[in-house]
Image (cartoon, rainbow, N blue to C red):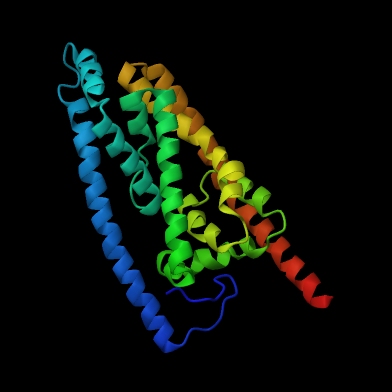
Length: 257
């Protein structure tokens, strides 16, 4: 049964609570490692045929044939499951590129987004069921303090949109924190999640162009991603610091009243 306490109102833990938190973290890390191995096996199953005979004559024709054969219901379910696992288990590498390889940049991007939605729903349900203790076991103390401003329900949707737009912000951490805020699942899915689409389609487009042999276009996509990543690297901390300071000022203002 989950503990009825706020994650964002930090308090000193007793030795028993600290030991329980550390035990939960060890268990979750073991589970994450198992999920990671399963995901790697699934990705190998999907991708290995694409790299056999690379550089040889007729390679791309063979790749297209392999992609067509993978376009079955079983392959589709496997891809969606892997994409959902990427949300639940943050250590799994991004597989949107795989979507572009297998299904094209547009369909692959949509399927990746569908898998991310499924994974987000799974995380939301698990966090709602187990509460703050689970999130404390998954998210580091550093990130809990850094994102404490999410406790401010005023303009929360706008804040989340900003966080999802900025590259480099750990979306996996936010996914575990959001269910413990005041935002409703419906609002989060309708107004926040669509802002993940641009990054998803960029990754999918890279995979698609590699498969098609459009290396110039693939390099162009990589350059765009690199520029966006650099912008995120320079501005991410400034935005997070601003939101944290704004949250502290708001709390001080409320306490003065």
